[in-house]
Image 1 (spheres, one colour):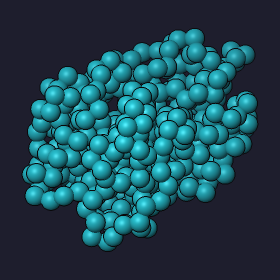
Image 2 (cartoon, rainbow, N blue to C red):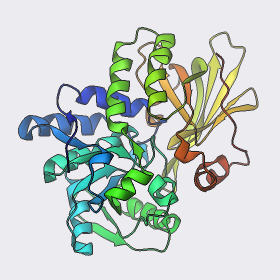
Image 3 (cartoon, helix red, strand yellow):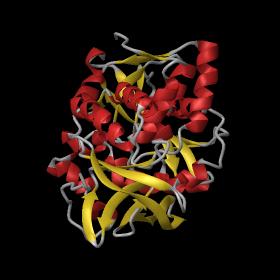
Image 4 (tube, rainbow, N blue to C red):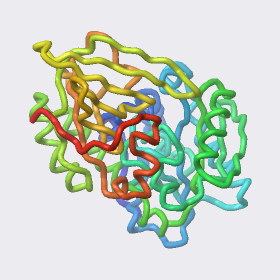
Length: 364
């Protein structure tokens, strides 16, 4: 397998910014994993990325990431080796050795977990992921949607306690995994979707690690909200997304958030700066639905992203709070999420909303 770019201490902070930007609020705040990666890179050197096109057809790739409510993840400190425990447990169960790792989702802290694990295990990480954002459930990964079994799946906690889950479908696997995460304190790390290099090329959202580095660089350099939208547009379009849309700007005036069934569930209300309009964002770990004055203007599978209106820094859902002045950005999803197969798992009705998918409309 050929190696492509590297993640080192010079571009790691941009990567973390980018994964938070594209996270749609989920995946967990990347800060803790970012700190652990800085220390690990200083000790062991950079993380090797590999382009999907450079994977051998029969290479063994495992998907991985954290599972649980982001509110819990911000308080329940990891030890940094949970990913190693999960991959080794799955290797042992299957009697194989993994050749490379890939993120289950690029969004937030979960976009960094495979990099930390790969560095500890001496494995490269594929420049791609299974969501192109963050979603709250296993069956919403492109790998599951297009026929790769999520199981056998290994789930572990920070002490190395673990379980191997075997099921007939990914939706059942998610239901069991969520209960395992609750038994492990509301947060665990999973390794799953054992696949080939050919599978990755067919079904992964490509080059999302390198995209996140570029997005983070743009976030860091942008001077204002309009400039951020303009600068991120070409990057996103080149990566297979649609051009970003200004959905709303205003101040958070109300919020409700609680942990239900292992997910952070709630809604946020934002008033426009002139108080003429209000937006409500529905949340299940991620920002799912955006409604303005009773009209739905954006839904999953398209991305709804939130940034601080003053600093332009992305805000994950567990960090959103009363009084913040924010900008809400819409990004049309990649083509792999616009097929009938994908919509069956990721449109609003898949989350229990009696709402049809809505083509994105913004204020620009």
